[in-house]
Length: 228
Ligand SMILES: Nc1ncnc2c1ncn2[C@@H]1O[C@H](COP(=O)(O)OP(=O)(O)OP(=O)(O)O)[C@@H](O)[C@H]1O
Ligand SMILES: [Mg+2]
View 1 (cartoon, rainbow, N blue to C red):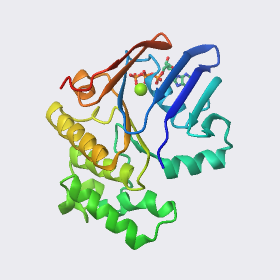
View 2: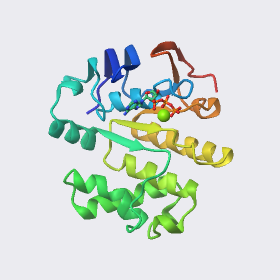
View 3: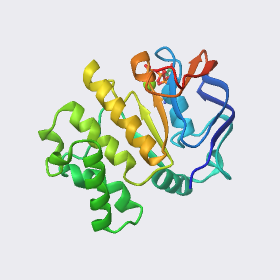
């Protein structure tokens, strides 16, 4: 089940600080989008509003027929678990679990039998070229490897949309490019929509569309498909 993600005149303020001042945006299924803008421009805030981690001050965020911004906490958590995957700057793997168990966990939490979730996890680790790491713990792998495990985890529940906030921010340039190549390839394979916050043009160049925010509004929204 994949739907468009539709933001209609979304504003977000923290106290008197207005961060988003009317964002209207549709992201279609399978699109890959870079959210760009200067530090402090509200990229992470926008990602959090899109993915139901934050409730907008005004305006709406919808995924298909569901208005995410109007759901109660429980329904919103459920939607996030079933439809969305997340990748952060720091991989945020659970240190006591092996790679395969880290990857399988979100799928198990949606009710998938453990054996099936582990099979899917193994398969994703293979797609990301790190099946040899399946039984390593996060403390035993490099930063780039940890980020690949985190990508596999984000994809394990077959999400409609993966949201990534500076997924290469803690990696060197070469490793960051490898991670973006893998992320976009696996997303394309699975028909997953990708929304990636980045301030790095080299990272954005892996994605079809660039949405730039400045001063709380969309400053530029451009299709880049075929430019690479
Ligand atoms: N929970 C919060 N409470 C108060 N202010 C916040 C909160 N979250 C973000 N802000 C403010 O909102 C503005 C935008 O922050 P945000 O983290 O979205 O920016 P960003 O574009 O992701 O920046 P960076 O590139 O540095 O990660 C900043 O001025 C920040 O201080
Ligand atoms: Mg940020």
